[in-house]
Image 1: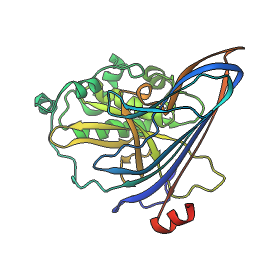
Image 2: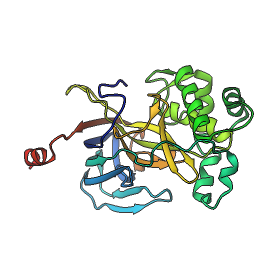
Image 3: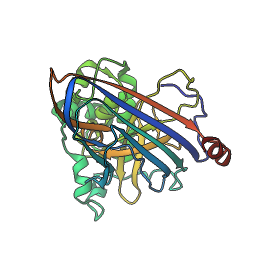
Length: 305
């Protein structure tokens, strides 16, 4: 992914994102049970001002909040079908982080305070796709030394290590690729860059979580196909969670739209589910994502009306 907007973002943005996922089944599906994490987060750094979800075939949708406080849409298709489409349309206002620079000098001792509860502990340990192994610990130790001396600075050093020593190569990995496999191949996409960085952080005791979302690159042509994006966040006591993008080697800023957070990709899949049907059970999936800036909200809303 490349940049077309300035490296320093000094103002918030109003972004519109459309995300369509279409499943085509080889045989007739008798029923499918699905969930979608496509509703952008509303927090101090962004606000979802519009959201619509369309499911074809049309069925009732129930929305709940999961363990990590992500909004999840649940829906069941109980009639025969060969195709399932899940499409979202959202408008998000992003903001500059007014907390200022990340605090310096925080060590692992700072993680002993009252802010450390079970919701943070989850992000210090192994998870389904991110195993905290001896290999990860050895690699992290080689980058930042034997001790964590600054939570944020050391996390960024580990992320930059991944950025510099991994190749961005689409098509060689998928959503099931583990950290161990990525460490061996030294290549992958944003998901792998985030997973490996998180593993290195956790191996040194630094709480780190996976973020699913989108990135506005500012120059996509109408014919280009965009994609969802992934980065990571580190917990800093007294400050909160702060994001860093190992793929682009920079802090998350108003170009980023956060959809969901979790231990790894398994917790934040945009669309997932299971189905019962005839035939081989094989399927093909196509995904289309578009992110654009709405510079004049009133004019844009009138045009869309």
